[in-house]
Image (tube, rainbow, N blue to C red; front, side, top):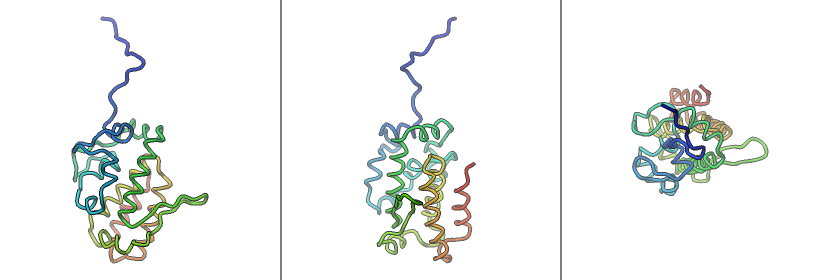
Length: 185
């Protein structure tokens, strides 16, 4: 039987994360990236099944096992598609504001700095065993894997400063996870 050739304009269906970031598709709960990024802080705190879509990893999430995971082709799609990295950067900036932080791009080393309302925002997450510490680990690793290395490194530096200032609120174990998230595996 002769092999059928694929039409050069046809392509396999895109990975759900590519569709979500590149095409504006919905996540498994029917939400788009833009909808999630427009949520108020209290909703970002209360909902626990969106962060896996905003900052995907190669491993399944215990909190949202149905969320898609990264594979080599999806990681490559982020690296090859500036618009996807730009949308990821918007998600990064939105979550920084949630934590009372802000991205500062500069000609020198870019930085993540504290906003004037940092102390107020930190009351939401800066205490031992808070689930946001896991979210921050996810953000650090996902941004590093998906081509936002400067953002990941700057966030780590900011979190490292928070850890040094508040050692009673960030465990050494959490800090070790943050440090480990900076490694490319």
